[in-house]
Image (cartoon, rainbow, N blue to C red; front, side, top):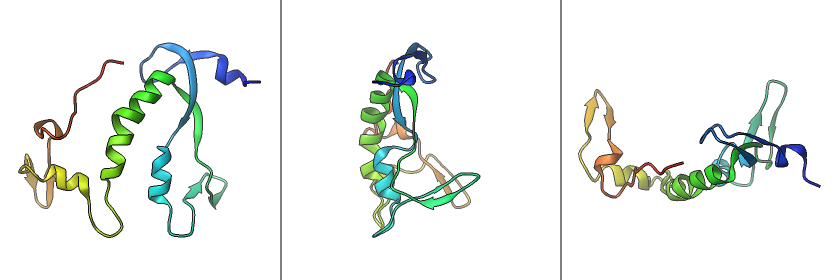
Length: 125
């Protein structure tokens, strides 16, 4: 039997509509693999406990439409482009195909919307 959170509509904090919310990973599920050290698990910390665990932090937070939007529109595209342990960083390589839009000291700023390979269009919620 589903618990009360799974069936009681509440306000989705992303689209602001009142809908049934689903169990959402507070950190994208694939980020746990990214943060997992060889042979170990990510570290989880609260005010009372610090522990190595394979458990993923979840809560009923977003409606299914917003959960799917973040997953397909962001996580699935970006996560394979994050920096790798061996040194490659595909997202930076994608950004650096164009000159930085601004540089101050040793910090460079790239406007993703100017790069035709990065699709930043806003999808309606």
